[in-house]
Image (cartoon, rainbow, N blue to C red; front, side, top):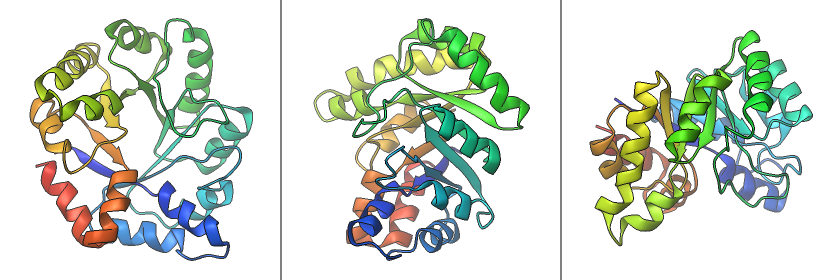
Length: 237
């Protein structure tokens, strides 16, 4: 069964809007685990506009499920993750000022750059995933970087889903099959929701993990966090 990792960035956004410690990031993360999440994802950015570097340090000792840290491999980010040693680091090619992740790596052009970073992270005992689009050439080149997994950037799928879901899923199936053939583990994330998640999993049931934040936290405003996590896990069956 595909695992659900809850991205708690949006919870940190709410906290930072007023200062203080409400909502408590660590408490929310522990509750997510208690309600059935099989992992916690964070994406600390240099301006710390949501998850802060100290949040990452505070979360590591209290989590009992998988800890996934996403981010651009800047010097500061790499120092953070090597000191914290999460289960997984997901390398994302977003510049410091990006509002959200909006593209996958060009692993052909950035192959040497990524290979050096991934070798360093794997020496630290950390599994490495690369955020990537559905171009099979990029997936094939990801193998040469030494990555353990690729994470499919699913915003194009989510955008097309309500218009033509068969068309929306087609390139993702090809990409997922390519990753499997290449021996890469497979994650997926970005704009996945209760609307489109089940269809994705029905067609690509070998996805190891989905990372979901914005839609899940938004749904929790209506259903409550516990019921929302259960609903998402039901979609993964």
